View 1 (cartoon, rainbow, N blue to C red):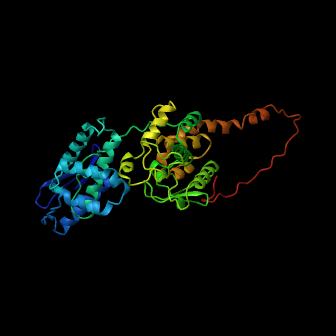
View 2: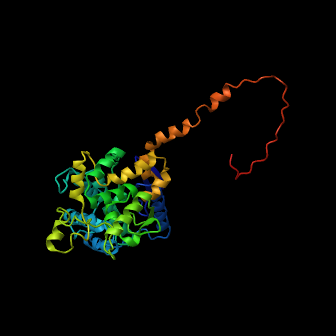
View 3: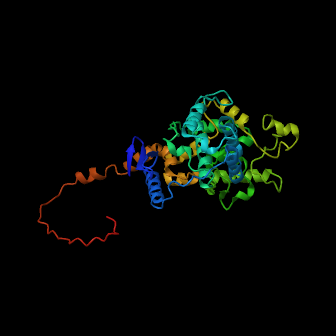
Length: 389
């Protein structure tokens, strides 16, 4: 019995009780080691040739169970349910999970790359990765819930492709001023909030007054499902006081249409037509008004989410450390925040320039005499393991 590396995979190689040679590959060495150990144990216990359990779980079974457990995720209604529709169409809802092989999921990935978006544009690597990650998670849960013996994703190399995340668009101070000047009052307040907090669009539009207290904005429902607290700076505090003075007592939402903007068009027209929500009560969409403001300001290649990049970029360029930025943005891993690291180069140069003249002044100082100097010998103390050097 042996474990050996074959390309990017780890292969187990052994003889079963009938003398048949068995070879099987795994993505990770740990998986190969664990699987070989399990089979050695089964052989020793004379249970290796036991009849395998007959798994009858269909794709529809696991998708329904998954929705039952994860249907309350914000991402489910936003895009996962659309992924599920494509899974059913591609693999067949009545297909047994055990009959879906690695070649099938790899072929589906290639299909996604060629499949245009609803707008007719080319699907990005990030979009393909998200859908493949969703499918992989479905199979992983089926494995955990004992609805399948193994996942096809563990039979070959990773189907997650490297994404091009080099784009980092953010506003200069001048551009930010131009954009704010072109925004109508209700949108100007939303943009100002984004630039001073780094909050995502939906976090801002759903912000309520109970979340704003004691000098902080308290977010509980976030993209990562991790709560976070964002300090309110002086500019934002002044704006919140101004909004509070204008609103009627008992208003729950922070961002509503400003006074005098009741007849604005283009903001959630369907709900207006149906009379579901008074125009001056709730802002549910800013797509058209934000795009128009960006165009009037003459700013190219800029999306609302780039306001979040602007917040982080300007903080780093003004001296904030990456750990602080990570916590403010709510990133789970510092690697996500490292994309802003190169922007701190100028602040590093300023810090080093504080030493200008330090060595030059010492080098120009010449001794006035050459008297003998008694040198004292200092016996170094014993350094404990825990001491810093």
